[in-house]
Length: 428
Image 1 (cartoon, rainbow, N blue to C red):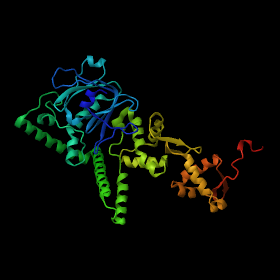
Image 2: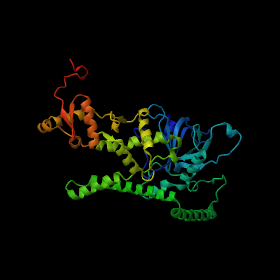
Image 3: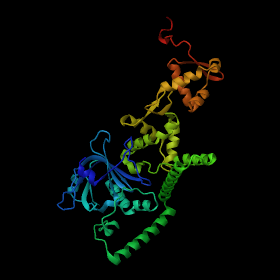
Image 4: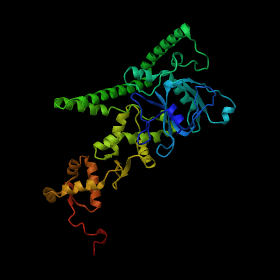
């Protein structure tokens, strides 16, 4: 990416799976694939021309307009972010015969540090352009970055608008007419604000979508509480009360599992739903895998992930398809299937040899040499569920490390005292 582009647009951060790193209280609204970002040529002195960005993923949030290259790890282009606070005007689309023969375009003006440019989004992929444009208008008019800043949870990515008249929603209305200014403009704006407030109050009691938005606000509030608790516990002295510290750690663990602030949905992601869900799931399983020793059952992840998503639940088929897509992405996790058919999620750095070494140490103890071990014994040693421990024991048996005894009491595993015998050549 050129210096002109990086000096005008701020860089955007992404996770190891290619998902954007959102600010606190920032929520995804819509996605479009195969989108070019092009500057509109102009001769104005304070304008800026930058090289076009080709075929990327555009993500609209309540704070920013993000552009990510198709492959973050291999493409030369870097992810960028356009704060919605720097957008001064969104041009209305005009239907014409010419527009029927070329890719849909969305034009808007951006102004940062007294420099402006008209940006054109050229949508070459599949997607509902009208829905994206409507949500673009709603996010820009909603000014969520100001609400988040006032409540202490906003991001610092937004820039200060150039003038007061522009920051109030732009000089032009959605239909292209000039807004009223002066006293009459202030009175009209106040009237529109009261009408919008009254409409929102009515929808809050009658519309189920309003209730779901309230649930997301509760998740945002819980995230703020978690940040305060984490910052408070780090500054607390080591001589504090153990019981109080234990209660705080329990509260932090509860808040950590409250939910995902901006879950990927079919409404926002569209045709890229499973692709983006797969990347978000790869980021989500990192902490549960660390607590589970690098491997966790697929059913447990399904319960944890759905609980974190709140009202935006997914089906088991969606989860399995999202896990299957990890083979195409450069993510540090993978889906593994044991010989018995049990499917688990594990880190790519997870080593079976380390697990086998701990199992071998367990079955070599004097008591285990006499009576063997069960899946429950291995589960207590490895710190995992008994079902997972049984899979590890069966895998160790297939490697020749263990042998088993089947009795009415169930499976009991013993150390293999004859590892030098070749099972394929046992008669010799």
